[in-house]
Length: 223
Image (cartoon, rainbow, N blue to C red; front, side):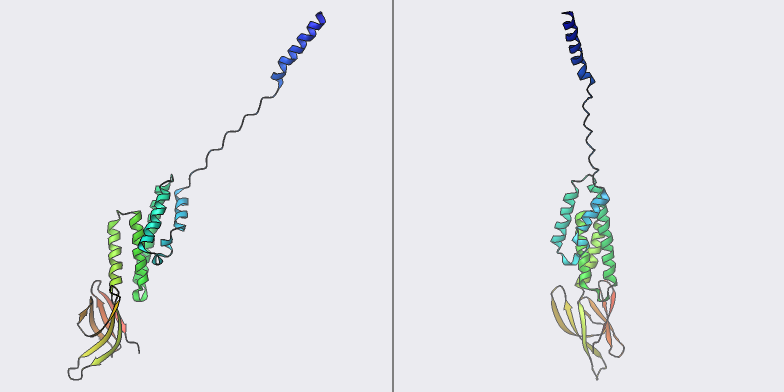
């Protein structure tokens, strides 16, 4: 009886000590921290890559530019660094606007598409920063003035043998009306914001001045 009791106590003691000898369950590792939000530079680079107005502004309408830039603004407003990214993009558009204006000024014959590109970049800047009114007004006015400039083609001359006066025959294309007008002009005449300053050489061409800007334009005869 005593041996049986001792054996029973030994078994109970082993059973009690077994859980204490088992290794504890390993704890689950803590969840990794969430990735950091995209930086302003990352957001800017991604957005600029999708802004067609920076790549081909002259191929877009004013409405398309404004819609595209508004979409970018809406997406970035949801990002932690979105406001700073928008400031960077605004700076990019200002640089692109300045470059487009300079290229239009320096281009031969002042191609119209270059000034149209300036206007589309003005549309983009107006959406991004409507408070930049001085810059917008200055660039818009210059572009619109250049786009209104008549395009003059010299077709010939006539010399009045009695008076010795020389007249020039020109075709004048008016962009605002999309019309061409044939005219006979003499030195000193003003027509469609242009002034006929003088004949160049021996009827080689004519020198005109675009009155709104003071720009002097030589139109040479094409034989």
